[in-house]
Length: 174
Image (cartoon, rainbow, N blue to C red; front, side):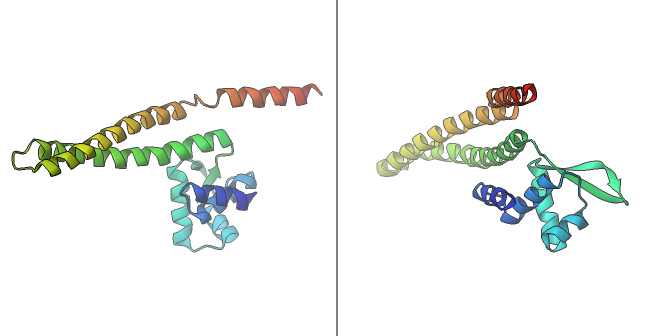
């Protein structure tokens, strides 16, 4: 399972070692210190710090307020719905920010080029084609932002959570 988690996270842009660390922490059933993680993963301190920081950024791992022998404790998010929610909303938001920043820079430049007197007809035609593509991209990223907001609010998990509760209730009734 740990290797499968690592491979899956690798597919979505997390490092393989970050995925392994999350898998180990997921099944550890208790908070861990950096030293414990380092020992289990057999990683350098710098690579371990990077992996933990990456997992914390996507809120798949959190640093706890309590300490163990004056060492920081970290715990994995064990609810796969929340882990998915945090991981993908973080990754998608980064994509949205990068792309909308580029779009915001490109649109005025293209508009200026199109309106410029000295722009050749061929250049203007190409700039108009690019403008159309970029406006389409903007529409997509506006939609993606709405998707991320819905994901953050948990709108997609209602049915799955109800089905899980129903299955748990059936088990308890037996």
